Length: 93
Image (cartoon, rainbow, N blue to C red; front, side):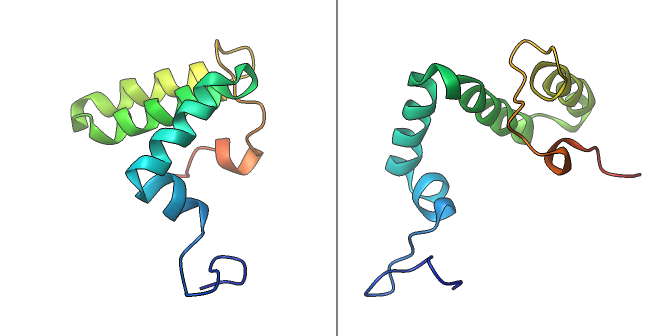
């Protein structure tokens, strides 16, 4: 594992392990995001991305467009301006 991702005993301390893979860690981190006004949009984006990943193929384009306009477009209702340009660039093709 990369430096800083394990502690003594080899326990994984990466963000992914603590806040995505572990159910209690995920729940607590999501509650933290939703409870802090400055991070509420990030929590909402996370929820919507998970919903997008579960939607039917026929719904994906419309769902992606809603995500883009709500979270990734300046002036969107919950614009996540903290995301890098790389994170918000559409894939080619």
